[in-house]
Image 1 (cartoon, rainbow, N blue to C red):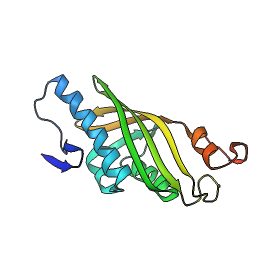
Image 2 (image 1 turned 135 degrees about the vertical axis):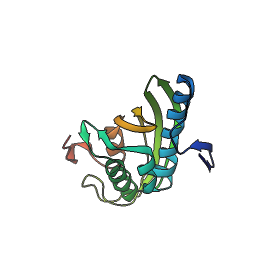
Image 3 (image 1 turned 60 degrees about the vertical axis):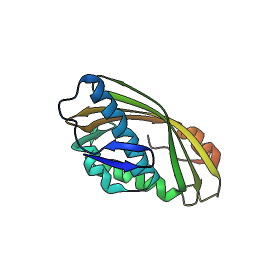
Length: 160
């Protein structure tokens, strides 16, 4: 089953009988779908098709609700959020995506009142896939670079 998006055809279900290369392309398409549906459009319901019920984020089992909360928090602080995918690499059951997120700071973020500043931040997301869904995430983005664009980083509390 596939769905049409502006970026092209993106699978919505697990591939049946695909070779390793096909599974890796599927993994890349699945990650692109989350960036487009979740991050760019705010379609949080897509998380239930993309993430496994036991999805692990930063070592903690959060299920699809974890990515939904992340997107909701960032999209509420940064309007007009858009994420651009620059590079994807897949090997075995892993897919890595390098991306840039851009948005306008219009609501508080980490205690910093809205500045109206357009910010841009880069990151890398690595997913482990099983059964046609993301089951684990390692995501690193330049949060120091982000907060330095909206305020004095020495004044912003970081809880880890």
